[in-house]
Image (cartoon, rainbow, N blue to C red; front, side, top):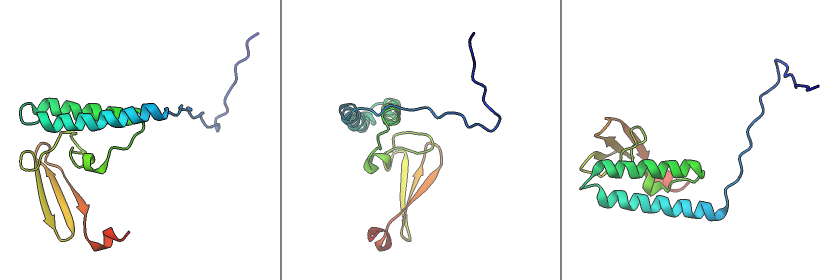
Length: 122
């Protein structure tokens, strides 16, 4: 006789347990992300769609291995359309009263980054 466990209506569903990736895998993932962003920068002038693909791959690697992308790399792609951005080509950068405003010319979205003394002290 096979018994099945019944859940009551108020029971919470079980959370899935994820295994921690090894340090070697994380190190390799970071190296690949750095290399992909470097390649995206080199190839952008000749083939922008390939550089966008490199950004997509770098994001997927970062999500798979739960690795943060460096802040210098995070400013190089749009958070809305995930395109690789080069100032003057497909990115407009403006400074306005303590904020740097990035405007993506691909998807027409913008985002602001605060700068100034009060943010440097924190």
